[in-house]
Amino acid sequence: MTSETHQVTDYAVQARGLTKTYGHDSTRVEALRGVDVAFARSRFTAIMGPSGSGKSTLMHCLAGLDNADAGEIIIGGKNLTELNDDQLTTMRREQIGFVFQSFNLVPTLNAKDNILLPLSLAGKKHDRSWFNVVIDALGLRDRLTHKPHELSGGQQQRVAVARALLTRPEVVFGDEPTGNLDSRTGAEVLSLMRTSTREMGQTIIMVTHDPAAASYADTVLLMKDGTLVGSLENPTVASVTEALASLAE
Image (tube, rainbow, N blue to C red; front, side, top):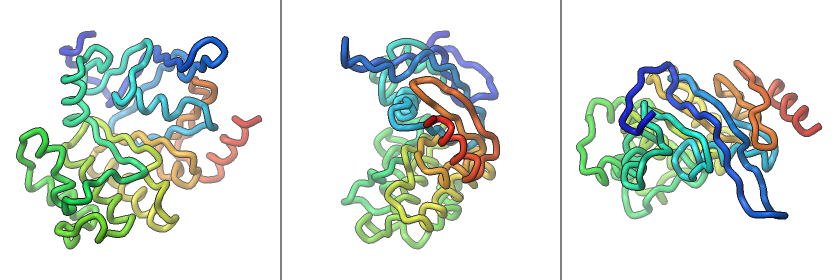
């Protein structure tokens, strides 16, 4: 499949034969070992596993933030591994959303301008009706003129979620998105992310180490030693905790 080939699929993201190695000789680490995985549209998936399992490497490769040594990644009918740097930058800006642990907001911009930043950088106008849907769903209407330092951690993360959703991306990746939030605020953000899949049709892939966070997902994928070793449907805190314990044995 070439980067220009478009494909109608029930999957927002597909990866085939992904391998990734770090280091050489005695320091060589196989972070990904021929991973095959597909993520259904309009679903919230969490990726979990012990430290060094490859979960963060997998997400970074899927999101185009890191290059796999081999394999292919299909998002929106395009093969990320065949895109040049400019095409990949455009892809990340227009078809991939990101929500990170550290919020990554521009401190000199207010909430509205932070939300609109990806479209502004692309020289595109935003869809006002969709903008209104997103900010109302996230409860940000009365915070749009506030700068990040004037917002709570939860409000800053809601701004980051709104920014990720505004371009209607094929997929939103979350890297420990509630790691810097207290449990109550984290639960609110996770509920909003889950709502975005069920009411807005958004696809979300999240890496987390927290069973409570993973319990908000539709599916949990389990990793160990660079491979996928299992999955949980309709996860609960108890089922995720038990599964992680079994991986440590």
